[in-house]
Length: 170
Length: 112
Image (cartoon, rainbow over all chains, first blue to last red; front, side):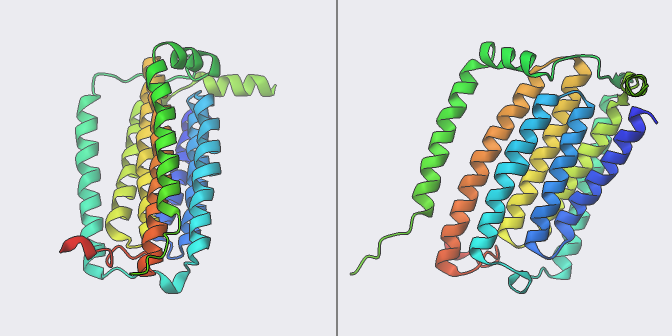
């Protein structure tokens, strides 16, 4: 049992659940499979010793964003009957386009990495809260503050968009 | 005993090629989802999947080079993704209120 075997097992499960996100007809099932995918990606982060990001990934993605998606799905009352169907030609074209994209990406990335055959070790402590926090509050303090402005803009925008419009009698 | 086993597991590493392949496959699955599915909410979910594939590769390279900057960037990507999902979903709720559907094929009123 080596790290490689654990990583391959986790990677296979991640790809499987990501496929189920696209393949399942029911939107709620897609959301739940996406939550599973995010947990598996967090497990991959822990394997790479990025503990802070693993926890943030679970809290922000699986906890906040996916609950928002579920809320909207339940609010709009979407079920299998209202699911739009795609024609077979578009399905085929999409799969071919995705396969070509995958081939091109793998070919381009494989060529660039012939020289380096080092392993992703877990020896360094970059992913711990202490080191990341220091980096975040010294080198990247301006982007960090700017992201709070972005959040305020997003919050105001979401409230403005989702507010029920007043009926205008003309 | 368990500590010894865990230490021996974490001594070995995973080659960077594995994470490149995994992230590329996840990105391609997300791209196929955007092209094939017509429900706008599932489309947004597939975009999240693609963002996560990029995050995974960024963390892998950050660990590989022993440099924490990549993980800070992943943190900022998560911030932007959260804002994007909020705005996207509220636009979707508003569109659903007007045309009673989330099919992207019907969202063609702006075509003129």
